[in-house]
Image 1 (cartoon, one colour):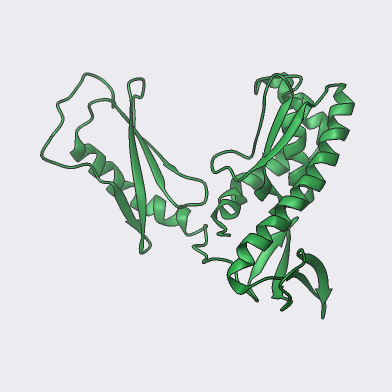
Image 2 (image 1 turned 180 degrees about the vertical axis):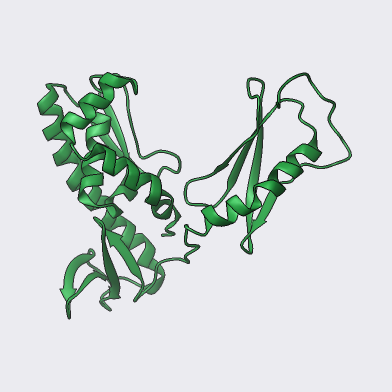
Length: 248
């Protein structure tokens, strides 16, 4: 078992800083943890990098052997995350769980607008072609703000808990957070998820206003606010990396 004793480190063998998987070179961050008893490999949200946690003093050759053994696992997991390029005209974006075709209007000004053209859900985007990503992300921020603020107010009223402020960020490791003094924060990328997942995220953070932990009482509160909690958690686990991988 890793972590027993303090084996000497092979100074002559450099630690790997990247791993090539499915033709993609991914940055690899290696972090030593004195309390770790085994190696733990994590794919960062969006599938753009890897993090390896190891026991302190572990020989480099064991790191190499571990990465070799888990290459197949990495290939399978990363294949689920599309390495999509930047958003562009005629590309696609998911809004509230529904695929939308991106169509440039040819106008230089104006906010993005959701519509339907020929039976196809479409997001009309103005501005120059190089501004597509920014215009789409701005629209998603508006969607997230509109959806979440209404849901947060509803759930907070149910619990009788005040909300001090709500912030929206482009986080890479978590979907939301809640402080003890009532400050909530959300990743606006959640606007790409279905409505019931957005509702779950709002319920999850509001539930922390009552239970600042993830114990049984917290989950009972969360499920009372959002009956589809279990389904939404499963959806995020299966699809969250895909949302983080979208390049704006």
